[in-house]
Image (tube, rainbow, N blue to C red):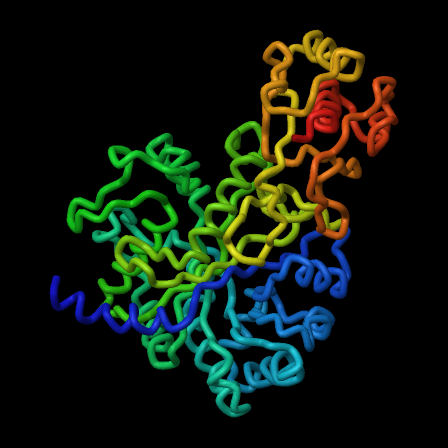
Length: 463
């Protein structure tokens, strides 16, 4: 173990040279994708300084020019074979998608493919050659010192991820992984890893507690302990990162840092995904951002920064698959936040924080007659002051920090379409409020009494 620690020291020292950052992935499977200039305007308003594109779209790269935003561009999976089989094709790709845009656009990394081993295994044999050919083109353009080359992997390539100290990569892929790690090591690059505690939680059949997946505080007795190292793990994210470190060590690579290229939580799911909710997404992403920006590190590498890209900027309604696949975004295409992050004290990035703002909303499954009585009382002469103790209404209401704005109905103190927020306390509407008396027209935007109750109560009791 002492020998292993000596080998691990270079990672700790080099990784501490720069603080961790939070970036955001920008997917484009939207029926109403904002224009590149609108996307950049949102990035600026949220002070997002690192983005990852899933391609190298020219219009997007031009819009990002002269912003200083650090950009990771990608060779899509459908271009991987061409780039991996031909040095000339790779050189042309770099000339067209990188050289043509720097230095105006601050391209700092190239991601080759996406989860190739697990999603496109037939192309895996050319993955390392694609890395090498792209890097050679950067060397020829004298850009290799400022632009790193790597390839994002799913954490599913790690087997037996808990306890982390026993983790290892699927050895059937050693012919790809070993030369890949040699490449990353020799070029001072990093392992790009996609880390999704949501999927680990969903696939655990109840073994993984929800709080453990969401970074919620756990009592010491509930923490997961690696029996081999006696390290305590308080969240799935850290356990997966340390599992990746141990898996690399199993292949004798101990000084390759990790950048998390995707991590997030869906805000909506179908009936088989009950924990894909706005509150859980808010909790996970807010806690993740704090965890990263505090340079918390992992139990194995405390204090070692792990930069992370949130998946993702927008909800993508055109993505195939389950409901949750379409609902990983931080924002709707209009720029309205899907939820309000709680990031007090975590710096300016995504600082749309309203930690001190709470709303009185209707509970899920509330009795409709009791809810109507609560609305009649709240909108009538019996209206009380805006204080948390008044949010009860015979059990049909509860306080939440999640903005209950719905569609085009944007309520006082919540997000406007430009992603900015108004702090303060909203006044209750007059006692003769009607369906159209609030900020929006309920007859147009609200179809259920429960949603109507949630929205009306939130207007009256925005605390």
